[in-house]
Each structure stands twice: as structure tokens, then as C-alpha cells.
Length: 239
Ligand SMILES: Cc1cc2nc3c(=O)[nH]c(=O)nc-3n(C[C@H](O)[C@H](O)[C@H](O)COP(=O)(O)OP(=O)(O)OC[C@H]3O[C@@H](n4cnc5c(N)ncnc54)[C@H](O)[C@@H]3O)c2cc1C
Image (cartoon, rainbow, N blue to C red; front, side, top):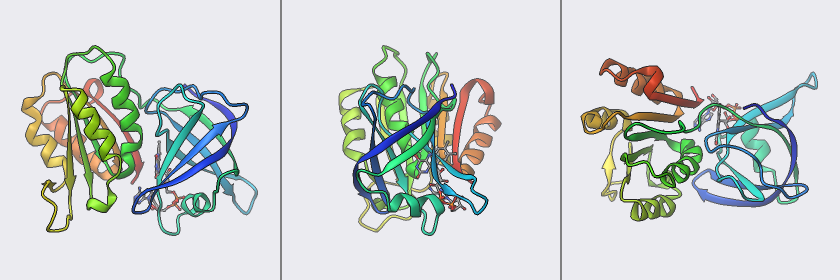
């Protein structure tokens, strides 16, 4: 699943939440990018003093089959790629390799599917959910999405709509430092997933986002008898 070098053009830039921005790209000539939901691309965001390319990975935030694709960044203040992306306006040319990566859905699941996501880790999760929920699999699908506060949230309308139209899917939003007015769930996703473990039948876990969350949650699952190789897939965006 490794990819080729592509050139693409920025078509649209949209602010989605605090420090979260979507860039939409079109290939030239216009053609859909071949990938599986969950895969990422490696974008050339500059060169170092010796002239070597500086590369950063971004999960594809759109679904396959369209003449455009999207990347969504949580901008890191002072970050090399974040500063480069902030200057990217419609019409700019961008070079990337891929799509690539093995964080994709199993071809079928024996039981339930649980997604444990923090922050901008939601970018591959929504396209993966769309692929999963279009399948005739009977198992429950539950998304735990953790953020700091309500200003980090985006795509709630899309996720709520998936929940409304697919009775086997449930989304749970967790905030670790919400304003007093937040009436939803509080805290981190790791204890919540572990507390619910007994409710899942033969679950497969997809964990994506903050590397510390992935390590802790994976360790907790394995301690409780989950098979690390057969039942846990993960993609760490940063440590
Ligand atoms: C497979 C893969 C897919 C990824 N997909 C995405 C994606 O879809 N969207 C996205 O925004 N990022 C994604 N990342 C992270 C991305 O590659 C960069 O690390 C991120 O954009 C910061 O790069 P930078 O050059 O701006 O910051 P840098 O100058 O490289 O570093 C700044 C610091 O910020 C930390 N950091 C990186 N990301 C975050 C974050 N989200 N929150 C807090 N601290 C952070 C780094 O650990 C580092 O210490 C992905 C990473 C991987 C490995």
C-alpha cells in the first residue's frame, strides 16, 4: 500500500474549529485519488538547510471516489508544517507522496467495532465510519471522541447524522476541560472505554490521535484480556 509522487492544487481553505483548518485539493488532471479510508499522505512542506525535503504525514479526511480530497490540520503554534500550511491559499501547488499506511478497516469484523479517538484523530475516523456503516455487518459501532473543550469540536453534525441514520452506531463526545455550561460527558476517553469493555462482543479497536492515549488505552485493554494483535489497530499522530 505505498504510493507515488503527486502534484495537487489547493481548491478551498475552510476553518472548522479553533485552530482546525481543512484544505481541499484537486488533482490535475482531475481524477479521484485511489486510497482506503484511514490511509495518509506525506506532504512536502519545505526543505532544510541542506536542501533535503521536510515531510509531514496527514490522514485523508475525505472519502474515496471524489475528484478532490481533503486534509485537516490542528495547527501547532510555531510548527514547521503548520506555519507552511497557514500560508497555503487556493491555487497553490503542493507535492505529496502516497496514499499509504496500514491503518485501515479489517475486511470484516466478527463482532463490535470501537473507535477511540482524540482531537484531530477524527480525520481518518469519519471516512472509516462511512465505509464501515455502508457494510451489512451486524455488530455495534461506537465512537469515543475526546477533546479538551467544546471549541475543539467539529463534524458534530456529520457524526450526529450518521448516528441518526445507523441505529448500530453511537458517538460519545468527551471533554476533559469543558466550560461549566457543557452538559455532555466529561473526562478522558481511556477510562470510559475500559469501563464499557464488558458491553462489547468480540470487539476490534481502532485507536487514533495522541500517542499517550493510544499507549495507555492499549495497555489497559491488553491487561483486561484483549488480544493486542487481533483486536487492536492504531495510528499515533504525535507523542
Ligand atoms: C500517520 C499520521 C497521520 C497524521 N495525520 C494528521 C492529521 O490528519 N491532522 C493533523 O493535524 N496532524 C496529523 N498528523 C501530525 C502531523 O504529521 C504533524 O506532526 C503536525 O501537523 C505538526 O507538524 P508541525 O511541523 O506543524 O509541527 P512540528 O514543528 O513538527 O512539531 C511541533 C510539536 O507539536 C507536537 N504535535 C504534533 N501534532 C500535535 C497535535 N495535534 N496536538 C498537539 N501537539 C502536536 C509534536 O509532537 C511536536 O512536539 C499525523 C501524523 C501521522 C504520523
